[in-house]
Image (tube, rainbow, N blue to C red; front, side, top):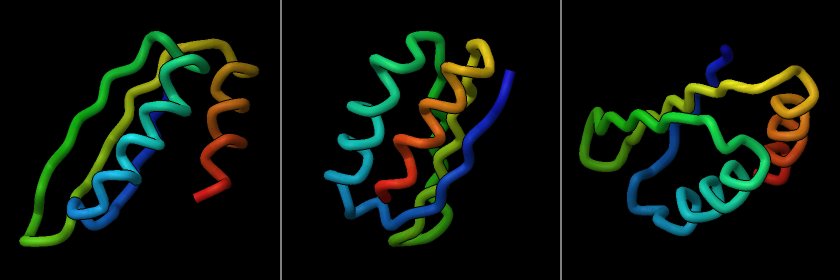
Amino acid sequence: LSTATIVYGHTKRRFFDSLTDIASPLLPDKVFLRAFFNREGCLEVIILEGDGEEIKKFVEAMKIF
């Protein structure tokens, strides 16, 4: 089990859509937890379950952001 924690502006809807597009095929067993901490800030915690190679592929895919 691993987590990925990301802070971004929640008005950036395309960012979250891109994030889910990347995560879905790579890690089918995941949970997204979202918290809004002010008008613009969003904290996204993704709980990842998979083997090391699957999680490594996810991390590599996240580098485009």
